[in-house]
Length: 472
Length: 95
Image 1 (tube, rainbow over the protein chains, first blue to last red):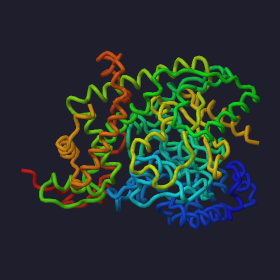
Image 2: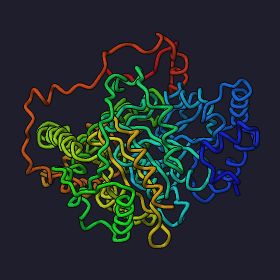
Image 3: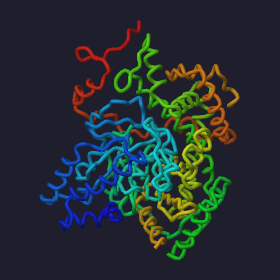
Image 4: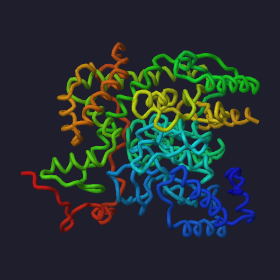
């Protein structure tokens, strides 16, 4: 049992600063639990062998007085975020044996802050999935119930927090891959405003949607990570300039519920009940809560399943067996490509590459891709109009609680529908936070999602803290 | 639109995407794609509103500038290549 598992990052920092505990003892307490629980969950793909060295660096920062809130804090990174000199696979066989040649900007900033990276976490191959069943390195199990999925695609990082292996972990969110697993595992997950945290060194899936973000136990812990990482980075070619990061508007203390959108058939009654109960408690805290309509929001998921595979099929063309990673031989160059990619990519990845190739092909481009871009632009407008009336949009994070392992693997569309509430924030590039609001049947966690206007990340955290308070 | 997809389309797409898969999986792939396309085709009825200029004018990229030192990663990148010769990447003969 890890005696620090209920501590916030600020509390851990205080203990370290006052020398009530050493960095080494703190990290050890977490690592022991991580290794033990990992036998059951498969959340980690690797525990690093340079932890002692990282601990020493952190201790040095404390003795020099150059420590930050994250100095000495054990963390974990999803296996698609590069760490120089470490293996990185994006959960795929096609990158077997590959070693990262540089640090992602996020990695660099976390190292500079003195965080101790204890390992890399399992994920759906190339972040394609909603259950972390698509990893070439085995299924991840939900620590709350190991017969169930942890959600995905960042299921390893979410499980790592839920099993007490680290107080802070990172994932990537292209259509809900941070928030949905956070909801399924009963923890906090945050997707910042699009491209306000650098994606340099993140293995790309769909570049117009991908965003790195934190997992933690509390909203404040996620905010601490966001404060460190949310900066312009010239190495990320679409990183938002500091001067363009808009000022937060005046608070209205008014939240909007897209009533029609969340009243579909697929939503479980216990999820709905937990959501409505939290809405009532937020009213007691002084929020006015109104129903809103966000025109075209219902098209977010179909738009996503055009744009994401289109961009993925292009991004994944670099995995050709020629320059790095797996290489399968063949008679011609074409055969080397096709054999390497056919064997190296898993089923879901192949499916999305072919789908992306289809929607971008001559004769279909206008019907699919162009129309999807058109709709994306109008969904952004719809959100902007609604945000003139409310501070944020609130919904359940996912329509169901964590489902059984294997339950949806044969039906891609039913799997895709588990991201129905998370995808709109990616389409519109908005900050979006999932906060746990208790448990439903079989003690399975339920998440509450808060989505704000562009660059209102700070306000989204504030509302998230109010949601946390409703639980006490 | 999904009805347009058949085994011949799948073969063409697999060639374009440089993917070699088993005949059995092609069957699965066809069924899966039909299901997914049926789902996404709900956007079919929505009219386009963006003009071509608006559509083509969306560019979020910063100026294209080099952010690395020249040769900074050369040795490390070469080390990841399956086969090299005199600092060059070896590929199959293509002519």
